[in-house]
Structures are given as C-alpha cells and as structure tokens.
Image (tube, rainbow, N blue to C red; front, side):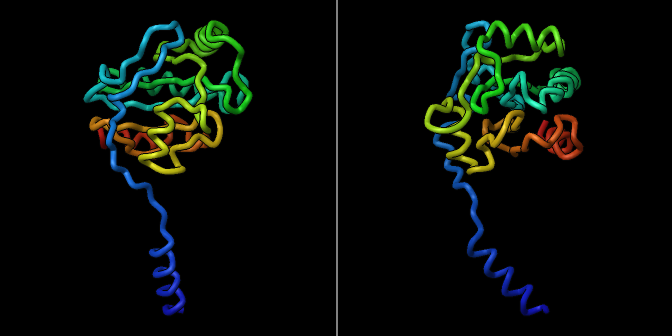
Length: 180
C-alpha cells in the first residue's frame, strides 16, 4: 500500500500543472470602463486588495450580490475593492448597462464599482481576464457567472474562487484577512 501511495505521489508530481506567473504586467497596468462610462484605472487601486467578480442578472448565483455588498461594506475601509464585471459570456445578462445598473441598485442596493457589460472568456475576453489566465492558469478563467479573482496588494493574483464559493465564505474571508 505504501508503495502504491509513493508511486502515485511521484506520478502526480510529474503531471502537476501550474501557471507560470511571469507577471510582465500587473493589474495596475490595465483599465476598464465603468458602467456609467468613466475609465476605471487599476493604478488608482495600488496597495489595495481587489476582488474581481463576473456577474449576471439572470443567474442562479445572482443572490451573491447581497454578500458582495456586505463584503464591500465590511472591508472597503481596510483597503478592499469589490469590482463587479457584468458579463453576457454565459448568456444571462441584461442587454444594456443602464438596465444592469438599475437592476443592481434596485434589487441589491449595490454601491461598489461595476463595469460595462464585458466579455470574460475566450478570444474576445477583456485583457484583464486574458492576463489572469496567462499568469494564473485555467483556474482564473470564469467557468460560469460569479467567478472570483482575488488580487493582492502587489497587483498579482492571490487566489481564484468558483461560482460556488460565496463571497462571505470562511476560505475567502481567511485569505482576504491574511493579505489585507
């Protein structure tokens, strides 16, 4: 039995895949358009923690907006930026930025920053999502709505979380508090 475990460990070591994080660029080298048309320059978020979340109005995970707002309220004074990135990459978003903004404000009282409706996967993905994949691997690519990418104060990806990870989950909070 020990031999089998040992052999499996060796095999796993050789087939381990991890992203090569060269970080020729950091998140601070990018910008994105806000839902109201202004430019969000990530360089304005230097020395802050950024949680980027691709969102959608018609998704079963849309209730996570409540927890994202609570997370923002709890940690914004300590240096957290929650950035919602509405996306129709999974065909579950409204058709206009104005409709998304109204939906978020009326239904969830959202006041953290939101971007315009943005592609988050594939060839048409916004450059920040391409950057995330290049530096952190496939785990940074949203598989569905409400995928989370946590950026540390150095402008690098600290961790990614699937749609199933709630914004107030113990594992996300623990990582967040460790890097704040």
